[in-house]
Length: 342
Ligand SMILES: NC(=O)c1ccc[n+]([C@@H]2O[C@H](COP(=O)([O-])OP(=O)(O)OC[C@H]3O[C@@H](n4cnc5c(N)ncnc54)[C@H](O)[C@@H]3O)[C@@H](O)[C@H]2O)c1
Picture 1 (cartoon, rainbow, N blue to C red):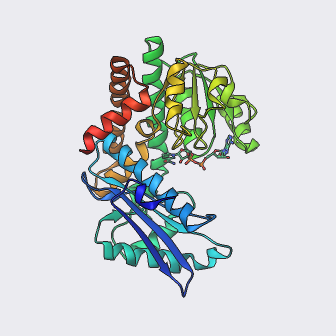
Picture 2: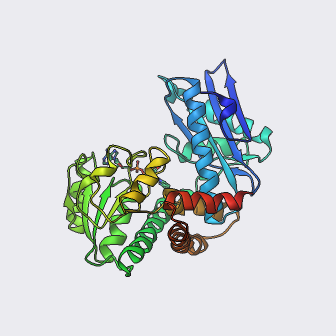
């Protein structure tokens, strides 16, 4: 990877050799406000891989916040885990907190894959540039996942409206890949709206629960991508929409929570060519970052919900712009967002 060819404002490498602490902070864009994005803690094959992940994720945060209309830029921290790192957690997160304090608000961190509310509490003891601490809006009652699921539900409704002329999920077949914090709550919204659910998860217990609670039809995790349905909703992994999977899709639309659903930029064009309506991931899954923004401005859950409702309208605008320009919805969303970043 050539670091200088990537798109970002600052890339900060942190280390403390005495405690084996290694982290990367990517600040992608701050014109609309301080860089906001969680801290991921995981194993990486190399420091370069960690930096690339931070850069890619930070860019995604810029686009998500800008389109969601919240006054923040995009950033991300990754903390490089290694065998035995659980013993070092407190030290490492305190070190991160001290470094964030030195950055003086350029970047605000929070929860992401592999980090916990306890970790954020340690950061908080060193700096105020952190969200998702104990008792905060983002850490309470799973509001982040609930609003993300609600936003995806709205994204599915907007997609149904575009494809069928009616937003109602009643009797529509929705295939949900991943029944984690977001996917399971999404199933609840859909089930209450009368949708027929097909679900898959690598954890059979989650599938059993969804079948019992929502009457969902279980599906093999390897088959859910190509199951016949009205809307396919990826709520597990990134990269599920790719050169190999797109020809096998049997849905009218895709709208889900997973980040980075398109493996490559051209995959948005592939969906467009197949006549499948793609609701761009960062437009659909902004509910979580909207909760974080509400937390930072001292607002409540009701405000976060109102702001999440903008997702429906954003998608209508993206679909209209794509139709008018002949571009894929992915490219139309990028164009709309990039205009906001100038
Ligand atoms: N939690 C949020 O608020 C939020 C916000 C924005 C985006 N997202 C994204 O949405 C996705 C889901 O988030 P989450 O918080 O529900 O995560 P999670 O870890 O709680 O749930 C993921 C679920 O997917 C399942 N899974 C993993 N691999 C699978 C596979 N191959 N097939 C089927 N199921 C599989 C897991 O068993 C798990 O139940 C992630 O991509 C996440 O980055 C989440």
